[in-house]
Length: 302
Image (cartoon, rainbow, N blue to C red; front, side, top):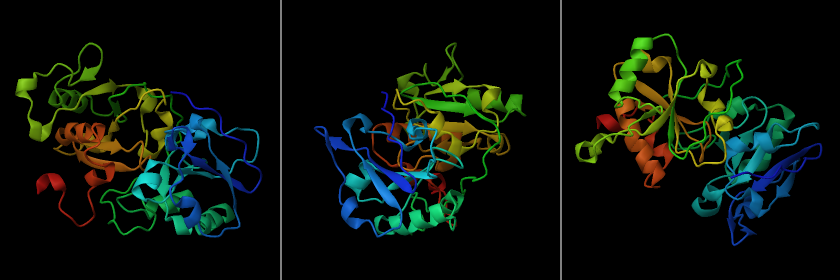
């Protein structure tokens, strides 16, 4: 799937892009009636070419050469069918990551962002487990880092499955042990592809993922991931094997949301990531349901 370039926003404008369509007609839900007043002009963008556009794909579609605003806003499926707030997409500090904001506060928050009273990092630091800025869904036990690596990164492989990306290269033995625990990688670089269905533990469903073992991704942070995922395939999730993976007995992986709140992370033992991928792929659960809340027992220990 490829998307057309977005229009060039005029100075002082922010793009508000509809990404949900039915029979070619733009669906805005109740968003346009709920937006609070603002000094920022919203440039409404609609067209079926942007159907199912995800936040991580937005930075590549914004024309260069002009004064690009620090954010774009998406009216996506969670807005139309879930009543969620619109998705703000970072176009400056860590392009492609996202945070949701209450519809009624969109104007106020855009004013603060464009006026310099708020930074996108402030939104990320103060979002709840559901990805909502100043929401009441509980604080994530492991907040996403807001300081990006200084490195630039290539695109990740295009796949409709999951990706397991190594980002720490200090423990070769730990990396091999992780792959062994996940069933071993085959000659094509996949884990979990040759498992016997009769031997699968449904309580700890095995992870099927394409392995990315490349130093070009050393130091990659969760918020940087969505912009690196090609739009051609509907990648289920990206799991990062980072320094924490090799420092703790459960070999936790940092799993990155690509859709509802791009760049949001959930840290969970590697043995649980397969079940997460399976539930996300069939739409049985949402990403935020796997995010551990500060002060609460992790769901896999209950």
